[in-house]
Image (tube, rainbow, N blue to C red; front, side, top):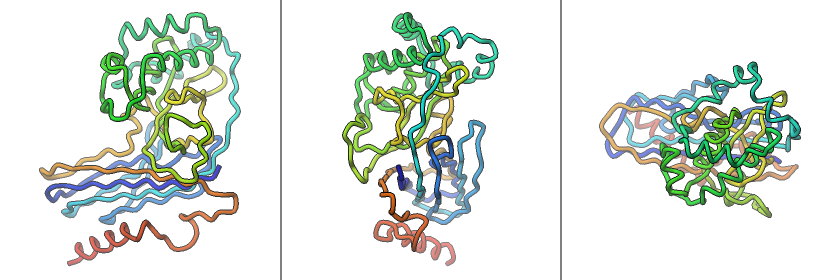
Length: 317
């Protein structure tokens, strides 16, 4: 599947700020089943982009603006080709996760992290639900089913930072909550698990069935990968209660949300910021030309470029 992705981020401050420094993790990654055809990141005010790979293997674009400014805009454009990846390791026995070399290799994905610190009750629920699972992948699937029994999807039901205990008590959440609870339960039964940040080409992140949209406006999505001894990572989407498909586009992974937050930054000044973010994904036909790699750039009535030129002139005055 060929997908063109535009990630827009708009910061507005109620007073001028300066020396803003931001780390942006929105570039899709190159991996099996996913090839990045092109990627470009631009900002207004214009800023030099420093790109590097972090400890977890995620591409990071660092941008900084020293001059005073009251708005900051980011536009990341990417073209990606995705395909289904055959899943192996369905027959790996659950005892394999106890191998000392396997545990040592995945120790960072077995320890509790800031958003996946579970409770004794959650661990007991995971152990009870998966007690009769004979393979690693079966145990993962049972845990995902259990999470669906514990949570109901509701937008804006939680904020980033909600504890597992409060999440379970409230019984409602969104994609990152489903991911965090799944990870907490998997780790509690000895299965290494990591948080994946990315994009989902679907008009409703809760349902992929019969969605034939050609363009959707969404937010970033989150899912989980569980380690299967001898076979790598098994990707599952707890929000949709199914394995990952070619509609999923990976940005990166880490222990939890904090390791792959789309944007993290600081600025000098006393202003209060407001933030708006949107992701627009278009499915391209086999013969379609990328709006990113071909022809002159045209961005939504030229508003982004116009703002960028205006702010460049203001800086020169």
